[in-house]
Image (cartoon, rainbow, N blue to C red):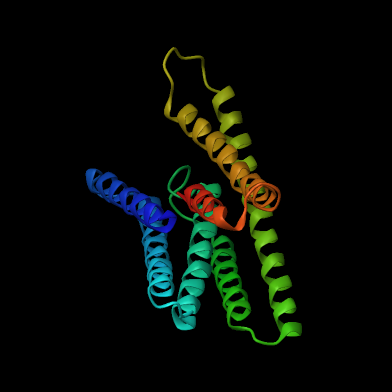
Amino acid sequence: SAVLLCYVGFLSAYLLVLWRAAARQPPLPIERALACALSLKIVEVSWNLAYYRTLSGTGRDPVGLLQIAQVGGVLTNAAFLMLLLLISLGWTVTRQHLTRREKQFFWGGFVLYSVFGLLHTACQTPALCQGYLLSFYVIKFLLTFCIIVAINANIERLRAGHLDMPLVTSPTQLYLKLRLFQYVRWAFLACLVFPITIMFIEITVLTWEQEWVSVFLEEALYL
């Protein structure tokens, strides 16, 4: 039931993004990137839903569906993380184009994150699995660190530009962009802290019959 509720939520969010993008002529590139990330998430949740329905209906563990769902999870998390990186760099918010080095870092991070995640998912040897998992977390840590640095750099840049402007009585576009990046920083902080809180609750509070609560909270956090 939790997976089904999450599926409905992601589908609603996806339709909302499409409606928002259709209202703008033409839609912003960052809106297209968000729609792609939500599309991947809907596909992942659909495979998870198919896996659990087959498991509950037949009593057998469909390993193939589980692996497909895990692959979808890796690609979805990679897309979500890279979307945060694009937002933190100010793409289509403070500037229209990324530099050549930023593009190389973006695609390199996406490929490395996806490859090590997929290798760990398909791994059968414990020693190799630990190496893949370690590499996966190192790449994730580096991307997370770059996102934090980029968000703070854009905030300081916008703040300096805002302070240099004459005082106005109504909010300006620059001020709104500054507030947007401040909201993004708090949202990203929640994405870092909330999973740890969920894990603590899962270990200390929830029983095995209530594990669906942690799944629901994790998917709600993505939404």
